[in-house]
Structures are given as C-alpha cells and as structure tokens.
Image 1: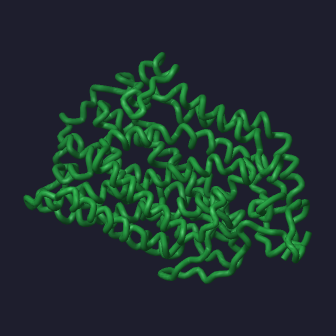
Image 2: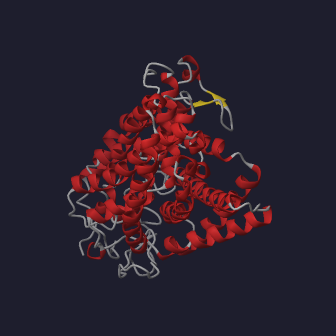
Image 3: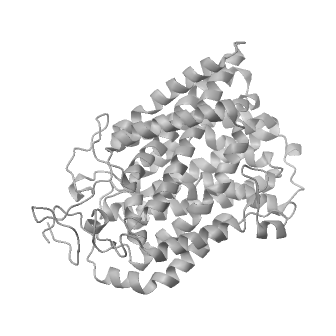
Length: 502
C-alpha cells in the first residue's frame, strides 16, 4: 500500500501512525451486524453501485413525512400555485445532496470525518455536535409520527389510548426502528431498495384517490407568486431543510461504499435524483390533499383526503415508511457520535441515540405542540447547516477533492491538525455564517420566537438558509484559499491506507 507523504502524527511503540479509525476488512453483507463505523473502507471492500445509492435515497423518501410537508406549507397560507413553486424550487437543493456525496467514494469514510479537513479534528466537534442534535431531532419526529398514527388507528375503532398506552407504543416503536440501523449499511440499502418498490405502488393509489377530487376551483390560481411572497420564502425554507440541504450531512455516510473510480457525475445524479423525484411527487400530492381536507397537514389527518376503505391500508403502510426514514438518521447520528470522539462502536452509538430519541419523543408527545415544534425545528437547523455546507463544499473545491485519508483518521497530528486540532478560520466562517442566517430568519411564531433584522424589513421573508450558506462559504474562501490550495498541492490522490510508517 502506498504511503501518504507529509504526514505528521503521533506514534506508538510500534512506530506506526495511530489512527482514530484505521482501515478494516469486513465482508459487506446484508442482515449481518456491520462492525465498521467511521473506519476507512479499503477500495476492495466497496461493492456499491450508483443505482444502489439512487434506490437507497428513494426508499427513504417515499415516505408519508413528505406528503405532510407538502400539505404543511399550504397550511401556512400559501396558494396552491405558490406551494407548487416552493416545492419545485426548494427541491433543487437535492443537487446539494449529490454534491456532498462526492467525498465519500474519494475517502471511504463518513461526512463528519471528511469535515475534519476544513475544521480540524477538534474544531470539527462543533459542527459534529450540531449534526448529532439535528439527526436526533429527525429521529424524534419519526417516532412521534409513528405514535400519532398508532393512536389514530385505535381512535378510529373508538378506543382511547391512555398515557400508559402511549408510553408502551413509544417503547415498541423505538425497539423496532433500532433493528435495521443496528445491522448497518448493507442491510439499510437492501431493505430500502425493495420497500421503495412497494411505496411507489402506494403513492400511485394515493394519487388516484386524491387527484379526481381536487376541483380546479380549489386551486386558488388567481393568487400568484407576488401575493405574500415572503410567506413563500418560508415554505421554501421548510422544503430545503427537510429535503436536499437537510440530507447533505448524511451524504458521504452512504456514498462511501462506492468505488473511488465511480464517475462523479453518476454519484451526483444518483443521490440527487433518488431524493428529488419522490420528494417532489409526494409534496405535490400533499399540497393537493390539503385542498380536499385541511387535516392533511397532519399525518393522522391525511386519510381524510382518501376514500374510507383506504384508511387502514394507508396507516399500516405508513408505519414501515416512517421506520425507514428513521433508519437513515439513526445510522448517521451513530457515526457522527464516533466522529465527535466518543469511544463507542457504531452499534453502541446506535443504542445510545435510540434511547435518547425515544426519551425526548415522549416529552414531545406528552408536553409539546408537535407540528409547531416541527416547523420551528426545520426552520432553525438551517442556521448551522447552510454555513457548514458552504464551508464543506468550498473546501472540497479548493483541494479539488483530494484528501489525505490518513490525516482524517489520525488521533493527533497530520495535515489537518493545524492549531491544536482546530482550524480557527473555518470556525470563524461558520460563526459568521450562522450570524448571517439569524439576521434573515422568520421564526416569530416558533419556539423560541425570534424576529430577525432583515426579515422584519422584508415583511417576514426568510432567506436564512441561503444567506448563511453564501456568507459562510465566502468567508471561508477568503480566509483559506491560499492555505488549502497549498495543502492540496502537497497531497497525492487519496488512498485508503494501512498502518503508515513515520
């Protein structure tokens, strides 16, 4: 195996580089426990194809959550035409997901291991912590929706579910959703691929039940984009946050099993289209369903838009859909905990996250206002996510996708160690980007309520995700263009090393 040059790292008694996540050889096989977490994946252990990446994302997003998102943005007060525009524009952000998938095949490791390149090993703990909280938040959303749907099933038959009953449902939901992410990447991709075929059929039935009842008089076509345009920007934030930008921090976690030689265009389009196609179709269906029944803005109210016979099939099939999307979040939150530096195996991190998400979900169910909390969560996460993504991808471009994987995995030292493991330029860019996002966010009706400077002066417009992304990316570029290019010039094409003599 070729040695990685220009590596400064700590050494043990053996004189070998001490890696935080050394390469491991493990058979890639579904329905067996994957031991590998953030470890570097050797080139010969990457059997995934772009089609597998496409179906993995499609299987996660053929999901009742995205129908709810489509209905939810209409419930804000948008016209149907405005909602369609927000859905079409907002889902272009899936190109971000495709772009963020590129470091995975190049390095053979996860997103927040690659994020050590711009931030440094210790500096990267800041965005890693933000990401872990975000992933757990999405896990909580899925568990709460599962509980609400099961309660709706009982209520449909006239059975009241007590608080004790809800607690039992939470425990069962947590136990079931734990299984697939516990087994790992190969199991996730296999299960989501085949379930996506089932969910496509379900979508076709749902569309057939909804569209004939959406009379043109319901569409409010006379109300165009110029009316309440600031509200339209809030709808876009929700779509961007729940969709393309909101998945970028998961991207390389799944693309890392692609061989390094996979054409970059195929990687980008496999991830982007796998997410974009079902997201657009489901959100358009949700927006249309809202015209028939405003209760469609809640998952338990969606069946009111369908024929009565479809109530039970819909809710029964909604449960595995929600478990599927939580699978993606649980796997990524686990490897993010490892990237933070916690001494946990991947499967151990999944256990920790499962317990935490179940406990917080119980608080939301018994104490919270779920759909208001959900809208606020989706609005606020872009405050860190936009700037982080801008920095992450500017760094990728500056170094032309070339990483020293040994340094990414080093416990101490290496190309990305810099000032005690911290790149203060990147943290400054992240902080300024987050500040910029907070100056143009419309969160007056969420918790915590906040009225921003630019939003107040633009009638409530919300460009937080875009403003934060641009400021974070621009500041990082200006501060780091010279230093990152020097780092990149000293690096060969990335190799996934074995132990390296120093």
